Image 1 (spheres, rainbow, N blue to C red):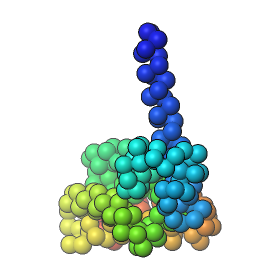
Image 2 (image 1 turned 90 degrees about the vertical axis):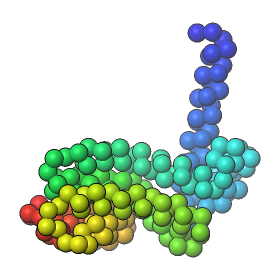
Image 3 (image 1 turned 90 degrees about the horizontal axis):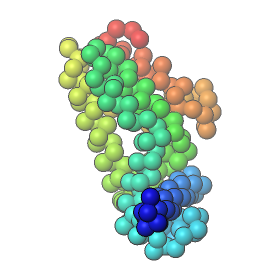
Image 4 (image 1 turned 30 degrees about the horizontal axis):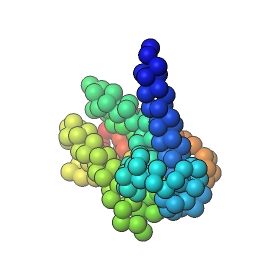
Length: 199
């Protein structure tokens, strides 16, 4: 490896490290305060405010990066496997399981993020776009269910939302507990509501 290639590789690693540090700082700030100030994130990440803008372009860009990090950590890539299961009920079960794992990544941060979406238009847009992707997934799954109710997609969308997992897991695991504890209940509810066989 040439010295120039090594320097370029090291520079990229430094940039990636800075980016990851800023994303983690944003998550920490959301969890601690329920707000997202770029100045506060920069201070927490020990970088200049201009660095945050350089890396993400805007608050929306930073929010997208936070959501992408949560999705990666939560195994959202496994959705593809769930959707390709030949049996539609197994596909629904897989969808519920993946969503439970995703919502479980950082329960407090996600709760704060979704609450902030109701107050901050920019945050609201990012959360709404993510929810729209999940809604489209529920439409695809509902279309595979023969004889399901007309509102099957809407029902599945509600059942796989953060608020449902948060409420169902709350009684069992406490406010900071693992939302995957709600997966069996959500699976049973989804099958019953959509006219499927018992889980």
